[in-house]
Amino acid sequence: MEVYTVGFTKKTAAEFFGALRRAGIKRVLDVRLNNSSQLAGFTKREDLPFFLKEICGAEYVHEPLLAPTQDILSGYRKKKITWQVYEDKFRQLMTERKVEEKIDRSLFSVPMALLCTEVTADRCHRRLVVEHLQSKWGDIKVTHL
Image (cartoon, rainbow, N blue to C red; front, top):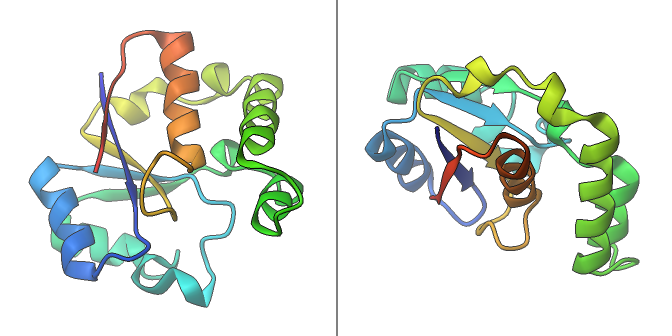
């Protein structure tokens, strides 16, 4: 199974949707906790399903089960915890939630991308999500757009 990840920060709409189209993405799984902020721009939950369908022929799914808690997210953003502590807390959260059992694997039956905010996946929980699923499911090839 092939899984892509993508962030929208510092990308124009043309860059963002162009990357999804080139990768052949047919479903975007939004793993953000907050997907309606003004800062989300063209990826706000009210707009993104329309843009994905019209521009990429792709479906939009929001999955808060794969998002951090507000406490974990705020702690990191406010520099109260380090990235390593964030990673540890989020990995523990995924284990406690048993996401590998609760997420429907059929979501991954078409070319799919996990969506989050960060520019790159190195310091983003979308990377942690795919690493966790990869460790549990074993058959995932990851490409970060």
